[in-house]
Length: 450
Image 1: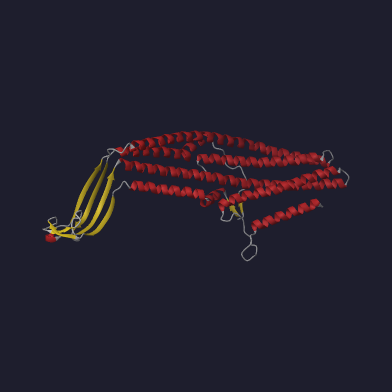
Image 2 (image 1 turned 135 degrees about the vertical axis):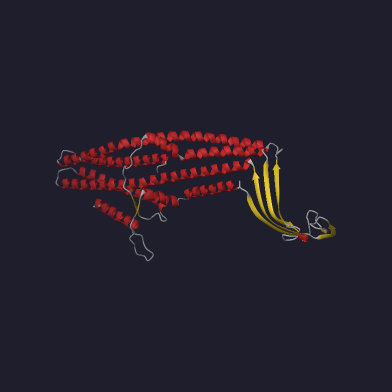
């Protein structure tokens, strides 16, 4: 009777969980049936890229770095401004001959040219120096590094999504296996009770079968919790509401393992860590050039066209021309700055040496990661066939043991051991499939094919 109540409670709980997951309550208080959304691995990655805040921050950093690179390049080009100014200065009561024609009233401020002064000029300015070109290279290298780091962030997100996606499929598979194991244990428990009633076996066989059945009930309950946790963890990255029902692709072993030469070739061309480290080296080289440019002079050029006269007009008194142009050139030669430039050069060289060390470290880490990932994928692939054979062997062993028990040639303990072995073999096969899928995905991430 206790066993019957436990089974009934388990079935009612499973139905309640299914109703909560699949049939949410509407605003009117009525339950609405919501069809589960099928999510492929590709769609899961796309949804996660749109919802994950850390990845969004990396995207924003890459975009702002690209804008900084554009601004640095734009600074190399001449700037054009249209300058307009009206100036009035109080006269001092005297006159001078500084005007365009004849005498004019003297302004009270000697720095001003006239009492009335109108300026309306288009001005073109350009500064020519090595520092500006070096700064543009620094900005371009930083933008390239931000692009590589965005790819690093994307691959990290993809790795997390793939791991959760396969974990969802794995936990669902294990829950199904445990449900089948519970059914098998229940069937065996019924068999022992019938044989006990027929006085063919002792009560000890019934107790052993019931203990096995109760263990399967606990295992199935724990598997349901793990499956639900895995689904929620993945749903946090995919949906506004993580309780949204969805389904995933069933676990499989699709995807052939590429050759080692192909892996090495793809990884050398598509690895973002190497690209980021190379961009760091390029940025540090340009920073050294920019720091050394402070030793060199800068040439500033200006071309202005318009009026700067006491009248806001093209012509002044006696038909004097107010409209014209001026050209100026300024060469600033650095002489003494208390060794500040030298210190900046030394600082940039230290940072460049650090970037070079980072590049060699990234290259070594890539080689090690490739070896580890390929070895893991190879071992997982080789074990899949053995795991399949183990499942077949355990299934045959269980079948034969049950036949022997029915014929009275085997004990209940042997049947329970055979059931446990069969369930363990199936669980190991599910773990082996998950291991191979995860290893293959890690290898694809390293080679940039996922």
